[in-house]
Image (cartoon, rainbow, N blue to C red; front, side, top):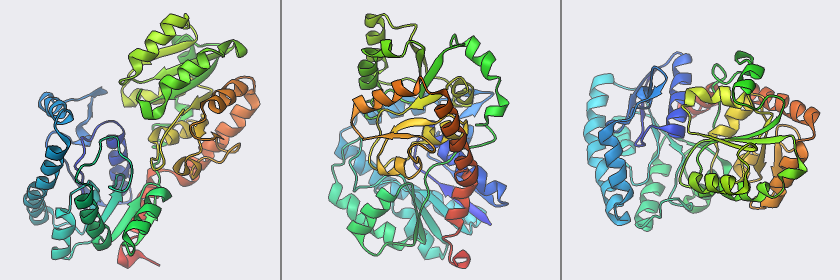
Length: 390
C-alpha cells in the first residue's frame, strides 16, 4: 500500500522518535511510505552520522514563534491550511497514496477535506486536542473545537495515544470516527540490554558498584524533576548506596544544578546534560531502575517504553495513560499522582531491593516485546481501514 504520512511538527526529539517509529514499522510491514514534513523539519533527517542536525533558519523560526502573541500564532496555524492544500494536491498527483496518515494538529482540516474529496482514506493520530490543558494556552478555543469536531467525525479512523484522549473526544464530540487507543512504543532493535556492556558503561560513567536510579528527558516543570531533586536531596542519607543519574536539559536544569551544588551532592546526583537519542540506550543500561516524577492526564511518555524495553522498570505517577502501561508491582511501580513524597519514598525503598528491581525490570521488557513494539501501533492503525476491519 502507498501511504502518505503528514505532520506539522518540528520533527525533533520525542516527536521525531514517534514519527520514525510508526513510519519504520509500516515499511517493515511491506508498505511504501512517504513523509511530508514542515519545511526544514524532516524527522528522517534529524540525525546524520550520529549527530543531531538543526536547521539554523528553522531554529530562528522556532524562537520567533515562541515570542509570538498567541492569537497571531493560531491565525497562522489556520492559514497553514492553504499551504497544506497546495502541497497535498501535489503529493496526491505525484505518489497517488492509498492512505493518508496524519499526526493531527490544531486548526488543520485541509488534509481531511481534500482526502475525502478524492476518496482516499485518512487516519488521524491524536496527540493534541483543544479539549485538554496545553503547555501553550489556546486563545481561539471555540474555533479550534469546531474544527476538531469536524475532523474527528469525518476522518476514516482515529488513533488516540491514551484512553483519556479518546474519552474526552467522545464526551465532547459524540459520534466520532472509529478509533483505537495506541500508546507509544519502543524500537527493540535499539533498546536491547543485550547490546550493551553494562559494567563497562557503569565504570566509564563513575557509577560502578552503586545503585543507580535514572531519568532521561526534559527538565521542565510538568515532569517535576526540580521538585523531586529538592525533595530527595534531603533524604539521600537514608540510602547511602544510591546515585541519581538524571540525563537531559531544559529550563529547570540550571535550578537543579544550583541546588545540587549548594547541597554538596555532585557525587550523588549526576547531571550529564543532553545526549543524542542514539546514545540514550547506553545511558539507560547503566541504571538499575528509573523515576518519572510527574506527567499529565493525557500524555504517553515515550521514555517510559524505552526504559521498559531496556529491562529498567520505572517509578511513575498513576495518571491513566501511565497506568494503562505500568502494572504496579509487576512492570513498574506507581505512586499517587502529584504526591512527591510518595515518589521519593518508593525510590528510596527500592534502592535496597535488588531482587525486586530485577524481577519487575524483566517483566517490563517482556511486556514491551509482547505488546508495545512500533509494529503493534502500525497494525492497529491499519486495522481502522474499512477493508481490514473484522
